[in-house]
Length: 238
Image (cartoon, rainbow, N blue to C red; front, side, top):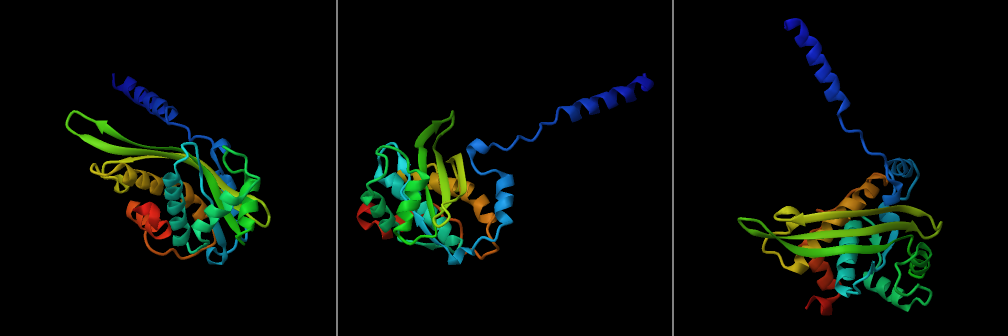
């Protein structure tokens, strides 16, 4: 019996080893890959504090301006934290409204974003598409909790070279005490929390590929976004 025990244990160990999950392959259809980020990091990119960035309104199929403002605020705060010179967001919104070459009812194309950002004197431009922003209630046996699901595609392009530096399509879910989205949060606060979380998830890999630089303050949360909106769009915050 003892003679059979060791081979059996070895067989189990081999089977367990074979059952380990294989790391998923990079999915280029969802954005810039880790390999491409490594190549970006090896390039002599400019220091963030020397770069002027235009944040354009994200396309949103619902047509709700408050969602566009929330997304722009979350992204602007992230870039400011990294030391970038973020151009006035209201001017970026006006530039998009004034442009006559945008395809109606369609997300901004790279050429649209670069053309519009160039009129503002930007070095880089951030644009994209809000795909999902849903605040909902989740009922369990003991209690109900409020949650949010946010999904979007972010893109960063170089205005002078017209190169797409980075892009990523991703989704997050937040609720409970995560990301500041408490069970008593309003729908607007949940949406701000969701976009704050999404901006961190999508942009952090890009920021880590940049030359060494100093960040200021904490990552933005729902309250920071609300304050930014109140300062930038006072009428909308009322």
